[in-house]
Image (cartoon, rainbow, N blue to C red; front, top):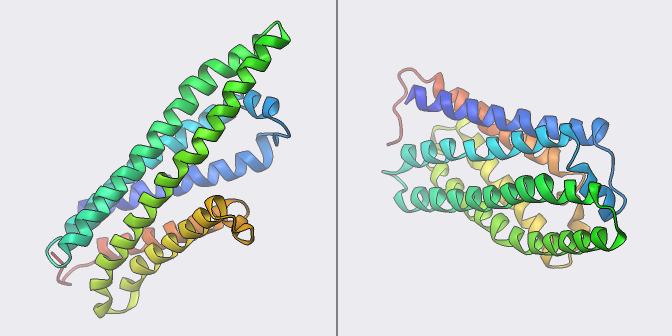
Length: 233
């Protein structure tokens, strides 16, 4: 179990580092896109390609802590544990499929074609496809965020079993509840017209992700350092 917790903590740390790199890249290295043309050309920047690969790969790594948490609580909360893994895997699947198309098709082909297009007609055709893709992504984000919300709720229920031990064991359920609230805010902002929650998609995105995953990282460190304490499951 100690090895599992170390590996899970490492995966979350890598995810935090990738998110931090993305935040720094957007602030200092990747220029703000003011129109669809600018947005499409950003894909050609080497720094954006690195950012995309880091984010995509570290999201896939999240399956490790999902499975480890489920294994830890399977005996005391079997339904919540199973649902957590199912919805967590669904979230990763949605993310991977979206980001794969975004990286290999939009960034790998369309952006290059747009940059090298010799006629206005060709450029307009690419921009129309790009606009359609952005509309599809908006719809794709509903099941993506919903699955992560349901995974967070399931893991919040499962990890709550440890709160009877007090202290640091509150960190995981708090983190999962905060993540569920964050995702609920994003869903309501994006799909329910609640513009007062737009910050969850903008300014609050990185701070919230950083805080939530830091809580989980600390929790895994605590589990790793357990010596004689009995384990759940």
